[in-house]
Length: 254
Image (cartoon, rainbow, N blue to C red; front, side, top):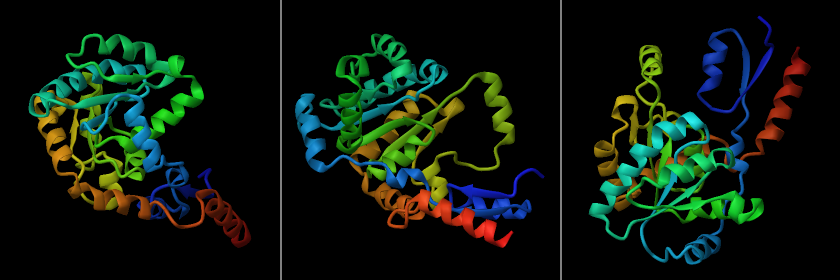
């Protein structure tokens, strides 16, 4: 009763809002305007960090302390299992600045030590450039569920999604879900091409085979990643421009 008009970031949102009696326009998602590293920058990243042509996994365990506490252990175990199949596997982890200490502590217990991108060591500007290049340079990503899947789609980086939460949250959220996927790429494209392992399925023995399969056969995801960006407004006027136009049209019609 308090909202007159909604600016939606996802194309599936306006019908939901309109059924609830709200005016709503899809205006595009800001991810379509994010800068992407060049192939040359990605190659330089591999050289600078001694990765060369080795298969590279980008590890994205989230940016919240509770995500780090839940995901770092199964992610580490997943990489150890994956390396049994791919012995030259390399790993890089861009640590969010406010959880970098927890990340550095957690990787001490990993059987495989990833290259952690730490803003304290690299400096803010170099860290952001390295992170951007890592997204482009990676062959596959192991990522927490969230908006990061759209950043990976923008870089055409295939992915496996995993997420866990506390027991009580599992019980509550599990009873509220009305969809069989939480991955945004799957939702935007109405596909299920991105493997996801949520809650009780966030286990290394389940995640590792999917990671290896995605690394070895990424082509199955590439079409959905490109389709995601197109559906989110790539090639259209910027989300800011579309949002402004939507507001003006709404006000003129009010």
